[in-house]
Amino acid sequence: MGLFSKVKQMFGGQPQPARPPAPMTSEPEPDAIVVPEMTVAELQAALAGAAPPLILDVREQYEWNQVHIAGTLHIPMNRVPERLAELPADRPIAVLCAHGNRSFGVTHFLREQGFNACNITGGITQWHVQGGLVEMQTR
Image 1 (cartoon, rainbow, N blue to C red):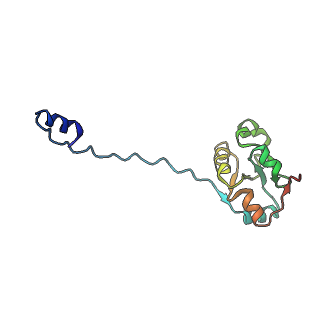
Image 2 (image 1 turned 30 degrees about the horizontal axis):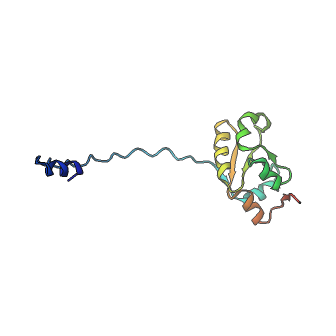
Image 3 (image 1 turned 90 degrees about the vertical axis):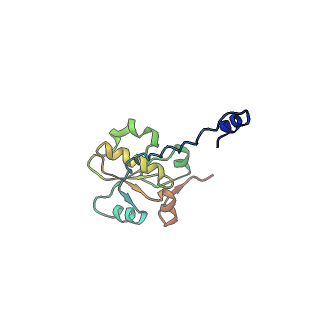
C-alpha cells in the first residue's frame, strides 16, 4: 500500500487496490564497437617486418613530452579529424595512447574514414613494461 493510500485510509477513504507494476521493457543493447587490436609483441614484430606500420600516438602534448616512442607521429586525439591528411592511406596505422582506451576510439574513427588502423592494447605503458625503447623527458 502506498503512502497516499494510507493517508486516505486514515481519513476514512477506501483503500485502492494495488496496481501491478508495469512490465519492464528491455531496450536493445547498442551494437558493440569492435576494432582490430594488436598486442605490443605483435607491434614489435610488425615493426621489424618489411612493411612496418606507422605508429600514431594520440596522447596529449604533456604526456608526449614525458615519454614517447621515437619516430612516431604525434597527433592528440581531439586533433585527429582536422589532421587526417597527414595519415597514410596506403600503410597500416598502429594507434597508441597511455593504456589503449583513447586509441580504441581513434582507431574506430580512422576505420570509418577508410584507414587501415588497429589499436595497440595496453598502450605505451605496456610498450615500456615489455622492454620497448622510449624517449623520456629529463629534468
